[in-house]
Length: 367
Ligand SMILES: [Mn+2]
Image (cartoon, rainbow, N blue to C red; front, top):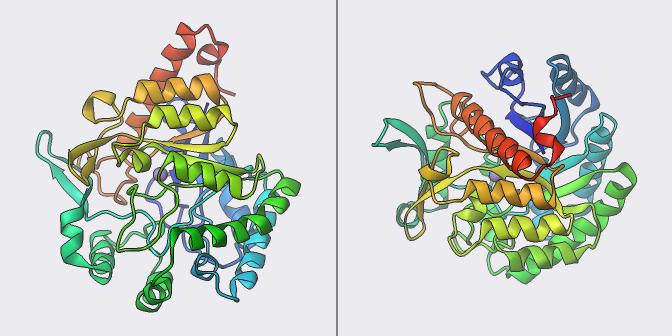
């Protein structure tokens, strides 16, 4: 298991890389260029700047996230070929700097969605991301975008790029009547173009699940269950067509048995990266994010880490969103403190699991 951390770059992330390096057991980043609009080519110079900084801090950067897919590709417009060409150019640029996994998603319009970015947790006075489907019903797509932008305290949020959301009404109109099967065919078109290039470059594409794990605003969604993943992996059969298995996204639907899903796709060697976090169910389609500790939420983090250990022990893992604690002011979900605690806890589980199974990994000093 390679423990990594999401970092938004020195211009946009208030957390110095030095602090990330000081988290016990932290070996690398899942990086991103957070100012890139979907469909844009990521320039070599900017990738170099970012990765050089990471390396200088003593961390690896083999996973890049949020290389977002342009809506025209997801909708299947004739202009998609141009955006696919740009995507391939970005992949080539990333591969030149040793990137091995690229995390993306194929969610129409909305990436992850919450109805409150700083919900008070009354028990301890911390706050976390929160979702309640009932609030969504009253809000509507335009209002949720306005609210999310307002609540982000000036931070950019992945998947909520202003350029993309400016054309929201037009984009929503274009998805009207699209079935999940049509979206799947558009995903196949994308994968058929991208995966052969990934095979050449030695890059795995890792698709992030829908978050939350059900359709919203009547938009088709095709990545929130084992059935969906089976179909997705079959769209283009290749070891480079993989999943970014995000436990919190999948776990938002109690019908998903998260440790079993890790096992299933770990055994198939189809997990390119893992986001590991816990959530607390508060009612039907209502949840908040919890600390990573099993006892604080409803996911069995031991069973998840054990499934990783048994089926894909070399996978890249990162703590996912954290709560805001200790009066930290940071990007919602991406503060330093709770994610550092999360990483440390997951590393503790990992050491125990390795020792109990006599695997060498838990004892080895980090490289
Ligand atoms: Mn995630």
